[in-house]
Amino acid sequence: MTATSFNPIQMQQNAMTSTNQPLALKQGQVFHGTIKQLYPDQMAEIQVGNQKFIAKLEVPLKAGDAHFFQVTGTNPQTELKIVTGPMAQASTPSQQINQLLESMNLPKSAEMQQLLGHFMKAQLPISKEQMLQAEMWLKALPEGISKVDALQTIQKMIELKMPMINDVFQALMSGQKTSGMTAIMDNFAQLLAKDTTLSESLRQNLMQQVQAIAKPFEVETGSAVLARLLQSLTNSAATMNEKMQALSMLKESGILPQQATLQNWSKMNEAKAFQPIQQAGQVIQTILATKPENARQLVEQLKSWTESQNLLTNEQKQQINQLVDRFNQLPVSKQTLDVFAKQMQDQLLKAFTQNTADRLFTQDAHTLSMKDHLLSLFKQEANSPSQTEALMRNLVKNSIDSSQPFIQQVVTQAEALVQNSMDSKAMEHALKTVLKNLGISYEATLGSKSADLHMIAHQLKPQLHTLLQETNIPPQMKEAAEMLMTRMNGMQLSSGENGHQHQLIMQVPLEFFGKKMDATLQWNGRMKDNGKIDANYARVLFYLQMASMQETVIDMQVQNRVVTVTVFNENSEIQSLAEPLKAALKIGLAEKNYQLSGVFIKQFDKGQTEKVGPVVEQREEQSGVDIRV
Image: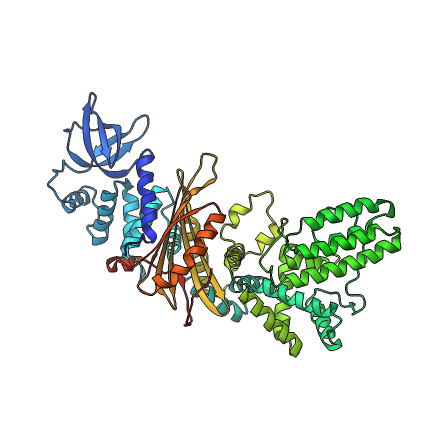
């Protein structure tokens, strides 16, 4: 394959790091270097790769000779001893390695020779202890893991000065895989569903997070169900039976109180003054709390809020403003305000329920969605984001379990609406939802002043920590939890900064309408002097294994906001399928101030296909288009 596979960006980055950063030597390390120049007092200039430094030698040597050196001191100056005799340029690497093995009394195994050959070529220092530990890992690699990948992992651990312990090695190896996350999640979920040893609260919390990850659109499905049920309650054309079923479902799901009736379900019983208006429900509360003498100020406040709502259409804004204008022409009293509040609530309920279908994945400036505005219109107490999500998931579950034909019809319509709303915003939402619920970087989030500790505590990773501390956890469950934890830790360790360069590895298990897949992305960019990502330059790699298109690799490169996309695939028909999509891609990039240079379709280089792992693996056969973005 001519495309860059999973490791080359990392290898480029490592090479750049060893070139641009000064060589940091520690006592006991061994490296291969050449004497470039001799100075008095047995001082010499040593070259290792592209770097040079001055060190004191134990014995006089000849300029031009290559040796394996070992660091014997670093303070106040670097001191070296010769581990092997001078190596002629004609000597082979294997001869040099054998000489080193004999000099340091190291085992002459195939793994040790391969290890030293790798680090000799990479021009990196490594200690005897690190060699012995690395040899053990190479000898015990599980099936399906290549020694080349293991050597790259060991090199990264040494370059980044990571602890040479098995947990770190396994996490890094796991984090570089491009498939298998979905299988690990499924295995953990199955064991969790059957478990009887864990506390019920821990088990339920884990099950909720696994469910949230497995169904990233369930909250949106709940929003659509909520909107449809509210439409039934407010629609004079709906039958009494439909209204009663809708009311019962909302009460059963905890959205309406048990004492709610068809007559009082939408009534606001509490007025709250002196609060900034964000949610639609706060509009009603503000009207109810306003004194008649402050009516003019109220009118200005309402018109300002209406104008800022991107979740309302221009026609709906005009209708609300007309309602406000009519109120402004009336003599203001407490009774007038109460009637106005009811009319405004009806108007907003109608507007937001209508717009749910078209704005399912849209939020306003305060990151509020349709469900937030709708709930605020008839619920007195404010919900946290996690509570709102729980309500929506509970509503979907109860609706699916319902035997009522009308409720089943509502669920079917809601699921169809979500499926038809799939676009780039939906995909972005799914990725963010899964990553948030996985809690991969929750340790870093804890340090943020704005962190929602309640939400963080319910993420999967911190709950896995709690699970692994249980003393009575079954061995199979412990192994499954450790595998999941290792994969998430590996993504963190594989991501990071090297100077101005930044690499991000993300793998998320996705499930769309019964189709399961692993989605992995590798992003490589650079940091500006102010510490922020430079959006002008980046490289993004996707490795896809899809049912219809089979193995596909997408390599996107951004240079000075000029974007070049190369798609690698064996199917010759892709060229004609891609042609009509290029114009839409060009327009979409232009809206973000990027220029499309070109989209190129190429076939794989057969000699390198094994180096590429799938980023998206679809587990159920289907026909037609695999995914639409």
